[in-house]
Image 1 (tube, rainbow, N blue to C red):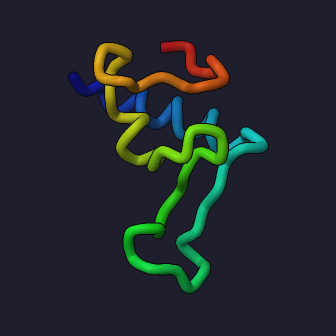
Image 2: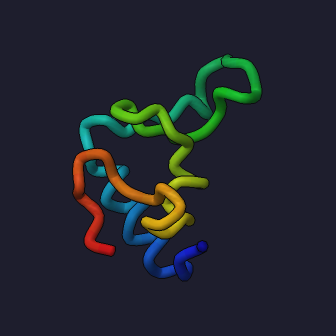
Length: 66
């Protein structure tokens, strides 16, 4: 269900270099909108990068190696 820490960090690094990466932490938004999100699928990246493919842990642009 969950990937290891190295895979998660590799995925986050890939996301941070993507043009669809969005981070609303610095903006004054409601609490449920805080944090990094994918501009393509709108998922919260902290959660999505933790999940395996069987549990919808996939990049919509197919950029993740694992």
